[in-house]
Image (tube, rainbow, N blue to C red):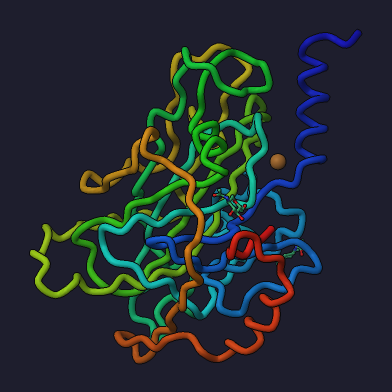
Length: 320
Ligand SMILES: *[C@@H]1O[C@H](CO)[C@@H](O)[C@H](O)[C@H]1NC(C)=O
Ligand SMILES: *[C@@H]1O[C@H](CO)[C@@H](O)[C@H](O)[C@H]1NC(C)=O
Ligand SMILES: [Cu+2]
């Protein structure tokens, strides 16, 4: 009979290899769907996707060894698509992950960065030039006295448990008063099941392009939102309290790593997180002449052809 810690270790290893890890399935903006990116081999991704591509073909993560490298910015070999999802300041972006394994406990984080001085918005932005503002740190990341699903380890409800309960999704409010223009939204989960050892944390950063439209005519102008200037390659250190942490011990709380959330940002509280189905497919935009957009059309035919092959359930396309 193996010791308790050996069993937990075996369970951990089995769970992390048997279950796929995860990626950005899609986002919904006011119920309208824009495609994410699936890095697994053999997948043909939608050309009109707004999710950044990456070459983590194992559907896996970026570790602390890469915290100072560009890999941490938008995942391994992250590269932007041309398409952007149109949103307005104050909208909630519903970020749908492809799944999330029970026991991969940790924080769920959101950051935004404007794409400045580019001709195509974020379409070919140099990721190392992006400067970020934290919008959400999923506080309280750990409620130690609530029942959770930490592989039977100490009780405690983690932000990832909230996310799993909502079909592996999380909503991020685009700040009111955010200046119109092209932005990268970076959503990130840090899985802490192996974080007891230095180098054991697992970061899953996923990026997507947004085009923030001017406020609707007649809307009062909100207070302008002040952006921060953080560089993703200095967000985390392998010895941060929230990175090098033993989640199998009883913790009284959790110290979120990285910059603090911008004071004007309004995170969607845990009890308002909810799953959501798409009611329509969205038409993303491409940015032309730096300030104007066009509807995405280039490959509409190819996209349509592929969709007809997918099963339709109750009039909705199911992906993944
Ligand atoms: C991803 O790209 C990097 C840099 O181009 C390369 O070193 C690495 O081997 C690639 N990984 C995979 C899984 O393709
Ligand atoms: C749950 O998420 C999957 C994608 O992983 C999506 O296809 C499905 O529509 C979602 N279901 C609900 C009820 O939100
Ligand atoms: Cu995993």
